[in-house]
Length: 187
Length: 130
Image (cartoon, rainbow over all chains, first blue to last red; front, top):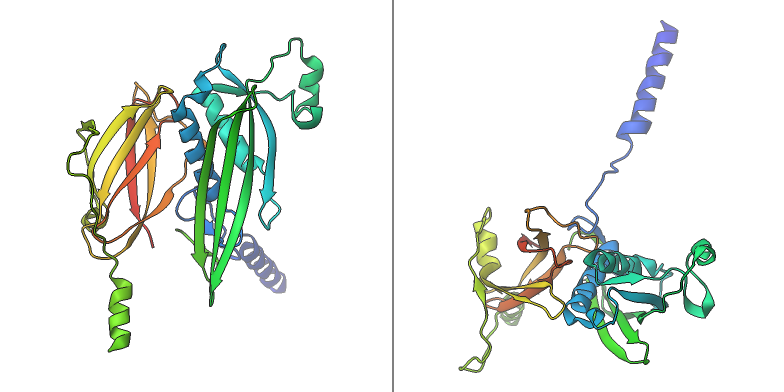
């Protein structure tokens, strides 16, 4: 009898720890139930900035003005001027994927800033070199403001597409402003 | 009295506007199909009309004119979805619900560019914000 009680208690405890002790759940990435933080860039901000700027870049037709389409893109420096440590690939990778899917541009992974390649093995395997048509550089800036308990942060995502003559043939900027007294869920 | 006036002024967020009478640009308006499950939302963020254009890069660009028929500021989210010739939705890795605001009585344009040249149709989703 005593053993049965102990076994039951262990089973109930295990169920509580594994199942009932958490309210973790999935939400759609970029959806309107994502957490909104004033003090940091959220995933929906990266998605929105990438979406807007990719659309503007594709609409401009700048990538189509190359001799041998699709245009070859090299990724240059993306400066982080925010107060947070961020991985700029959260922005740039989304743009790269979207541009590749558009059929208008491919990104070189064997040629990068300072002669470093993103994929060293691909660099060793490379049999023919394709000079890049464009370099993509940018900056992410954070501007804070506050009044009383209300905090506001504006994140400015800036990108420049530079051709082989050193001319910025396309430039894009997307600003996202968030305001609140603390983090919340939804827009 | 002053507090009440301030409260009224603070909540009421309407807008007046002016534009040139002889509009030079001609919008190519398209006929649309609407599914309205929230009539309140349709009044707060109503779709007046939609026009499209093909960009220099060959991509479909869609612009929607929205109208807030209420007298107060409304926040909403919108998202464009894209479909190919076969009606299949085009996976768009860089697509998020965009947060936006519209003042009372304001007419506002939102637009988006298709992610590929294969995108021929679209759907605009509007969700009321908090």
